[in-house]
Amino acid sequence: MYTLILGFITSFTLTYLIIPIIIRVAKERRLYDAPNERSAHVEPTPSLGGIAIFAGTVCAIVLWTPMEAFGVLQYILAAFILIFLTGILDDLVPMSPTKKLSGQMLVSIILAYKADVRITSLFGLFGIEQLPEMTSFSLSIIAIIGIINAFNLIDGINGLAGSIGLWVCLIWGSWFAFTDTPAMAVLAFSLAGAIVAFLKYNLSPAKIFMGDTGSLFIGMVCAILAINFIEINTRPISEIPMRFDAAPVIAVGVLIFPLFDTVRVFARRILNGKSPFSPDRNHIHHLLLNIGCTHSQATILLVGVSVFFTAIALLLHNIGTFPLLLVLIGLAWLLTETLSRWERKKRREKQRADNPTVL
Image (tube, rainbow, N blue to C red; front, side, top):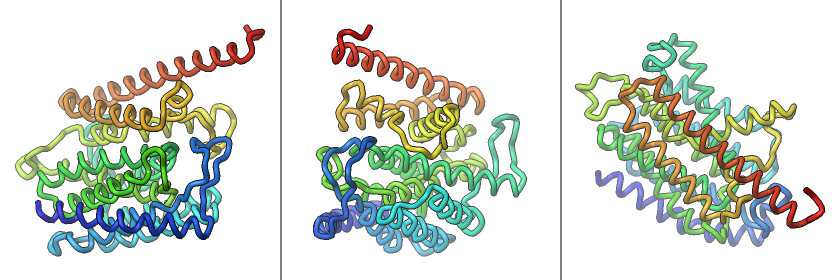
């Protein structure tokens, strides 16, 4: 337990001390994220906070992961470096979606093939238990890329991606600690410490953004935690004191907001004849801003939604994988559809107020 506390404190301290330096250098070098028509901010703001999150987390992991639990951590650290380079290049010189996806693909292959971060069973979901090896590798790569992009896409308002990442790290970090999985527990609590320090500077009014460097890194760590959570639950209950038979769907429940929002906006863009990677203002956090929420209010609401769905997934895990998946997706759709209708109503009211001649 003490290594988890030390990991948290180390990453928090380093991140907290590094961020003011990054802010100062960014201002001197004019390395700003300038607002545009899609932005939720109005002032140019440094966007390299992910450097501090990465540095604090990696140092804490290397310092406090027990040597006997180090295992494949060398490959995970290699993937960390590659996703960091992908993110910082995109922050400094914006990359095309294809190039950024190529970097994510390389990272995912390293994690699946070298670090063995793989989904090997669906626990009976869709009638599927054990997965063939190539299917396992393919599904794992898709899952890693999907989660990375999901966190990248929700990083649109102050505090949101960091707060969701913090919740994911705390819930799974605690579970890994309880199930005696020290390497994953240290990873989760190290990132949690770095995020807490970052949020001190990122909550409204934000002094710095995490940029793609931070959101891609947080997404990748959350993908590693999710897949390891699923895999550890394939062991018999005699080895795992808190085992769940619906582990893949519980993972979906923990990550429901970024995953559902990503699938939703991608589907919407494709149905409208656009590229799934074409940016817009149709994310759930944008809808909340449109109905009058502040950044802080929207972030608190969406973290609350994540906690709610996690609780539902844990409480109903015994009803079966497919029924539980239907419950989670149905609730997510219902809440999102209700919000969308509310947002459209608010928009029409505003249009009528701005132009009384419009019916």
